[in-house]
Image (tube, rainbow, N blue to C red; front, side, top):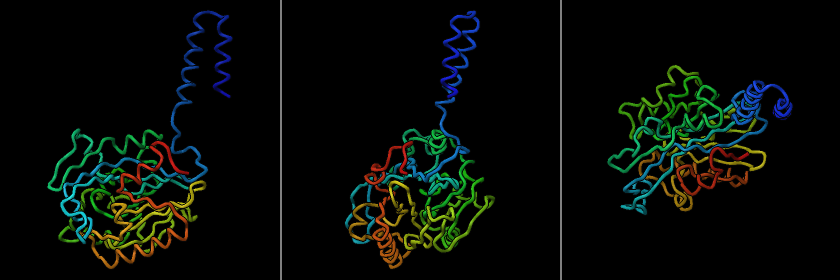
Length: 299
């Protein structure tokens, strides 16, 4: 209504002094800018929304470690590393935080012994695209504490960190477990924390639940989201890394416990069946690309 009224005012201005045209034009331009501005965190959201954000890309020379039965030995592969934003009437949850925005400063990414890692767009910029800053995020939670899931954790020290006790104790062990970089999640020391050891209802209404799924690491987890139109969605964490691993129940050789991994697979797949959930393998390019392209979202 305000925008239409300003347009009408500009039309009337055509019959008055030329100086008034500039004033009316400024008002119209301001209205157009306001109309195009993304919704801010304070704006009301009446439904739960699930956004998939780009957290980086991992290209490996040898996928052998992702199965302890030899199917991938010597074969290269590509894994995406998304973050997920769940926005609803009771707050905002960020699930996993990607490789880290500092990697975006390396235009060609970085090489290591196992392959290549890159970040094409920062998490901070993606949040800004939908009118948010890290300070607007209510909760941060992690599928587990491997470095590719904690890269941007320290951006969110004003958020409440939901942390699995067993996972934190393991990640802070001496010597530091392989794949863990404690400096990337050191913010937990000053942030408000919610320590958990079981399934956890994030918003207290059943819409978003963290589900225990130990095995990949001692405190690894998956996330269940109930959406109004899309139904239940379950985000895998690292319960699986590839679609084939899910099909064939393959277990990575570097998992903390093979037995716990298989028990978690049994449990989560039963939940998927009972809830008729859409299951998203987080590191799978095919699964992640099947989701709405950011800033689109499931609802």
